View (cartoon, rainbow, N blue to C red):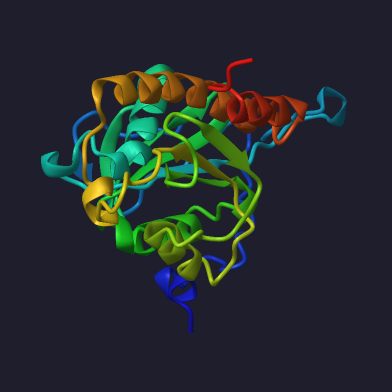
Length: 257
């Protein structure tokens, strides 16, 4: 039996979306203010992506947005932790407190616009990220199409972003572990953040655990700002023409004519 199916016997391993009905009292999932451990965080109510006003009451499907990285001050600001930084930036911009611990993860529960979101920073270390994300996706019954992974990508120039509907793991250990814990499924969105590649014969691990230079840091900070806008667009409008334009602009952002 797969790790996803075993994670929570009371939910479906097929990621069927829960019914979330509109409420006149709240538009956010409710969590307590202080950092705490919780066994049963309460889902809230909100209205999914791309509503049709003529269709009557709208039901929104929640998004799980997970940044990959390593916990602890030792890894703060390193190339391998830009996924964590993106989640922190989204949380700050959307006013979502990262104050709940569940399934080996630090969570923030709130919304982007009217869409409920669960922000996730796995605390299980990069190579075991799926052990945190798989059970959370099953517990909240988040469909694959609404699981957004954010991670570092050495195949992209530093500061370049790419948003995709699906894909492989590209030899990224954290991403590979997530796929394994989602029953081998790859059909989930991902936002990759370019960190460049190791210079010369530099060891890959040393490169990933290295902090950015001053110039690179400026590029990454700009990318994080642009990434927040891209995530908002994805959550509220889905993979629209805006996302295609975003990817095109990112691809050539450092090209000089």
